[in-house]
Length: 105
Image 1 (cartoon, rainbow, N blue to C red):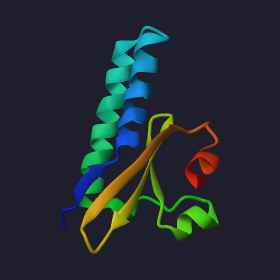
Image 2 (cartoon, one colour):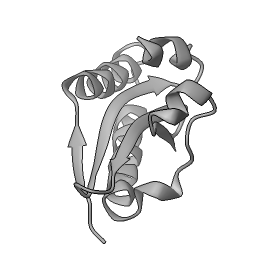
Image 3 (cartoon, rainbow, N blue to C red):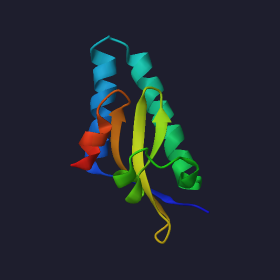
Image 4 (tube, rainbow, N blue to C red):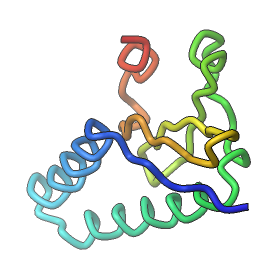
């Protein structure tokens, strides 16, 4: 079963901002590239089997079908649209951020 991978504009901005921060702040472009490679791997998995990743541990957000996939110290938040055979990436956030609050808005 193949799913299409759809990434929201805000998730794309999250990914770009994270990679830029890693590349610029600690001056480590190799680490930024490694993060981007990890995101690409997760994307390929989402295209094949998005439901292997768990629902988030927040009852309200899990009720909306929100799942998360790890990518180094970050979390890729997405929903799986079974009817449309699509995985929709909605945000990409550092694991230490208050993602529950961010995603609730």
